[in-house]
Length: 283
Image 1 (cartoon, rainbow, N blue to C red):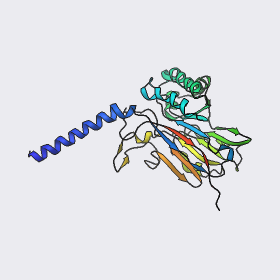
Image 2: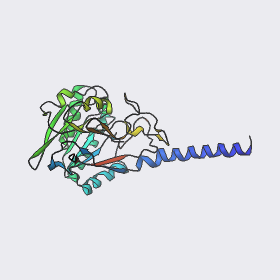
Image 3: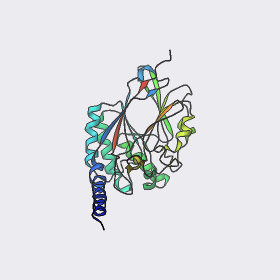
Image 4: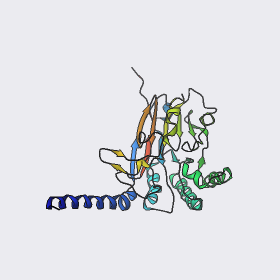
């Protein structure tokens, strides 16, 4: 082998080692905060500036440095609500410890915590009776679990709706049930685990903002390529970030934990701070 080829081969091996160290040992512990200020059509003036903290995909296997940072970040950020968009646990044996963590978030954030189910939650609790245990455990921890249902949020005499679907990745979402009782003329923020129903949600007149997770941002992203693989019927189309379909905004959170392989490369775990803003009237 010529000297040039030895240098090239050595460089490739070196870059692979650096990438592996970063992906397995460094980035999974590097929490980032993303900040969004989506402009929402017909948002009541009372909710202009309403702040939502989103975390997703904990895949809880015990406390980590990232999980330890989140409670104090919530305390310092002062969100109006905290939302958790599914995949809290991979194994049923972890639910009590995860619920203790959620209880801590409820106390430290001093804001209501809302959550929806994810596909890994359904895998870990694979029967309706077992899934009811999942719901009850997190409700006892202080969270509000939304399962194809909605609640009205009121502020200064005005209201918006917070709707939460069951997991759409495994087909448990029921959008008719989720929006039952929500007036067509109202504004709704939707919590859902995966991007699978984004197009269907965009057709609902109430939808202004949809918050999802599931994708982990792909976990591995390559320069100039982006996410390599995303478990979604849309492939990498909605891998992570903010999207607009019709009059609605859709955000896919890159998540906290990992699944299958404990790696993140160019795709750090994230907590998202969303500040709602009213769309300016056209002149």
